[in-house]
Image 1 (tube, rainbow, N blue to C red):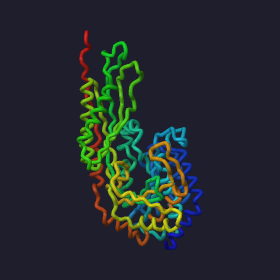
Image 2: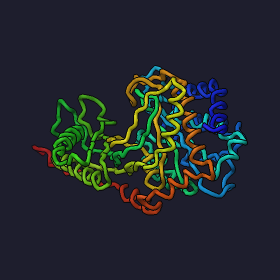
Image 3: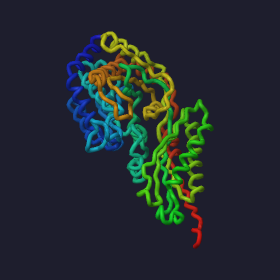
Length: 450
């Protein structure tokens, strides 16, 4: 490390108790996407303490805070990104009772790492040693949950998309960003590259409409929407052999509303489905097969069906430039306490909206541990808060500094070698094309005997 890099680590080390307390506070006050008002407020407080003037209201709860002032610097702008939202897992012991949400995703560690990095990078000597500018971003709604509520916001014109970074792109919040630095939590390792490809997806809200009747006395007078949903699930399952292995298709969902009582024929059933694939062409093909499965179920039972398709996330794009993170990991390992590196360089069938950012600009992406349990499950715990929060802050800060020092030399190399998958206009056109509503009206038969 050079003298400035050692100073960065010393500042973060001196603030370690404050950083860990922030991380645990966010962990115990989890909020769902586009509802992260407390979390957003805490981030704003920290940025103001460091002398910055954070801007709020991006994608409802998002925040941007420029190290050197907005537009104050020539050269590239690096976004250092932390996510704010959590998951609807109310049975986690640390779920916030006010929201029923819990940070079983590790986003609290992301945001804490950004705050800790900002504490060091805002030091005047450190800031002066970097070219370009840094934008610390707190972003909402990475988890694709609470879909029916998000759909209503879209219908009301308050949102364009369900995912936070997608919405930020749509609003122009990334227009002045040239390169991004992101993070994920990864139980079972100390740190590593998060630099593989991923599945993209679309989401479907499906509503089957039938006719209520007494399930025991006169079921023949009803049209059972739950039967339609059951048929749809079977139809979808039977599509599996038509999916190519290389497309890594995943189709999964659940019934969010399934009737009112066991002795009443269900007249309304709502389902949520995600359709994922390695490429847009692959998941568009799979989505059409899901649609025909849904419509076939409606036809077979006489129900109506409404299929609301919402654009999801793009496939992630690996970055060939790993030298900055490699050097940071080497320095962390040299300290001797954390040496277990695990790189994620292959393809993952999961999805996240860092893929949307990587569609437009280079993404430098890493992971850290400190957690036990399986992500997105109620067994997730912070086992090592120093690793989860303080080491994450050091990696964020050192990586940002090494990208931006010497006139942002390494950031410029990343940008020069990056080939955009889409322009912003092409991205928005594609996303808009994946949003649609299709309605099939009920086709009931006459009731026998009438």
